[in-house]
Image (tube, rainbow, N blue to C red):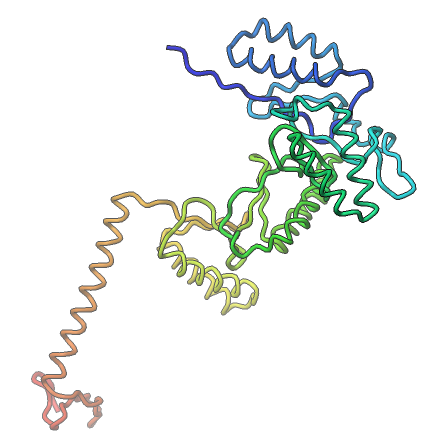
Length: 363
């Protein structure tokens, strides 16, 4: 029985530039058809279609999980953009299509696939003009028309797409994080701007600036970026560490307190704080917590049945030890209150409350 085929769509580079004379609708349909052929393992027909696509000026990236296509070479895209952008009297960067929005994402889908491109450009241009004139009512009306056509857009980063997705910052999608409850959604705009700046820095190979932005996202907004999965999430930080891996449960409250203590000890930096940090680290290790001080993460893997039984055995031993100490204290109390040790002529004598020595002691 043949395995079900999975069609992997090809995503156009978010910052790709259009070429004059290229029929984008035909090109996108050919790319989608080739993706279907590859899913069916009809590689000979897919290669023939690839030659046609390349003859139209497009480049295909067949990397598994990172399928993409573009028209403008990636290495000189920033220079081409500087030449193409023209600033009008109001200050909006025009892209040669009558507005300052850039298209991103994959082929048009649904209603957007049936909506003419010239109408999209006209609506985007009219909306941009309405926003510049502070005509919010007209801008909202045009936005509704775009949404009905299957077009989504973001005014912050000046992007639009019609492939059914709603992420606009370098295709980085927000995923659920344990810090969502404490995150102010108003800060999401600042996060999107920083993510866009970081993407531009990486495109210019300015990796030092990209790392600085990643640290700012982490320290200021508690946002962690995952470049492999092209996603970002809000995390809950304790002492500078954040959790990765499965949820912990009831023990998480104690772990968070210990991590906060570890972070405080690390900030002080003296010998006493170093000893305290070492003690906290040992406690966390006994609890099964794994620390990664390089990436500042912590995790507590799910324990096996043998590990749970060993932990229960240690807990039972501690309970029995406390019970023995309690019984010994009760016996001593029933025999009389123990007085402090008395020194007489160099010998040590332990006496009871009545003054008589315990059996086995010599006055």
